[in-house]
Length: 147
Image 1: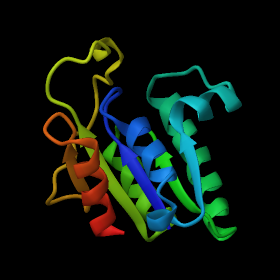
Image 2: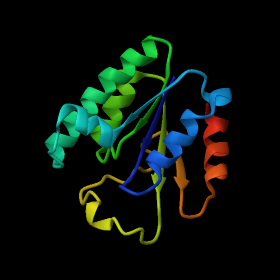
Image 3: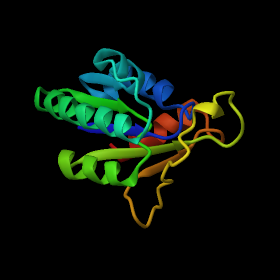
Image 4: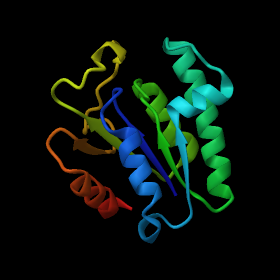
């Protein structure tokens, strides 16, 4: 199984991914692929459209391989473009997409992706969690319900 958390920076992706990783009773054998760490490994410092697409395509390949090896893969990437989310679904098949958004200021708004395609439920199949309105436990409970 692959769980793909996406949303603007500072929406809670990494926090939720790390908690999920520790929930072996839910996840089984977890492996976390975090966007920031992934960029470090591949030394991708391009935060424009091309750099983001390249980073995500590499992550999809790694996630598919790790799933093949028996891991439950948790991916935490901004994933701002609908075309990329569609490509992820097409390539990975049974992937659980979870959109996180946070209303209010968190101090990292200057890192937000200006051309982020906000997902529409009628166009994309995903779980939407407004992390500004939910506790961490509530988020984990809602994710558990779709696994």
